[in-house]
Length: 245
Image 1 (cartoon, rainbow, N blue to C red):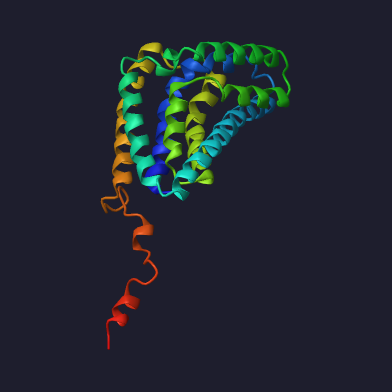
Image 2 (tube, rainbow, N blue to C red):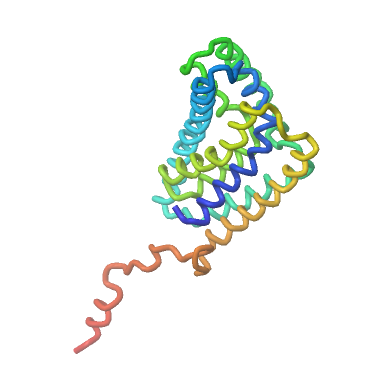
């Protein structure tokens, strides 16, 4: 995976951490973790976070199958440009601090079902339940996760998409770990200010994908596809020799 995509995935995840505190923080806080047994507290917290990140990685791998099929068909360049444009559209619709995912009709129903399952699991306090809570938490409808998944489509393949989402999840880890440890330590006003920056980041990431898909020959930003440098049978020096007598 390109360095620019790695930085984008981590940066997007880190910025999304502010969003996660508002969206998933209450779930984390309701797990009943106490600091009386510090080792158990930390391990259960990490177990919960790993469940979330695993779900993101699996979802990324699933979308990676779609992305790879486009690559095999020779349409990866068009997919990358389309993903970039879609990210920009998503970002523009997110201005104002609202999660665009909440505007999708079926999202509220899906959210209710997941929360009901989470409610049952949260009553138990073993490592298995913490991990299951994290897994289900990863399926919660979330605009930031949808944006990251959209970006992972153009990462280049199954493992690249899974890695993109893993890095995204890793970026959210610090804030989600801290919210269990410190409670909702960031004020709503400060979080809203940070959330206003996220659409700008997404527009930049969308622009990066568009440039990447156009293959303008700009190092690290818009490199030309290696396939363009592969000579076709009967071309190159072979053709030159055929004209020599």
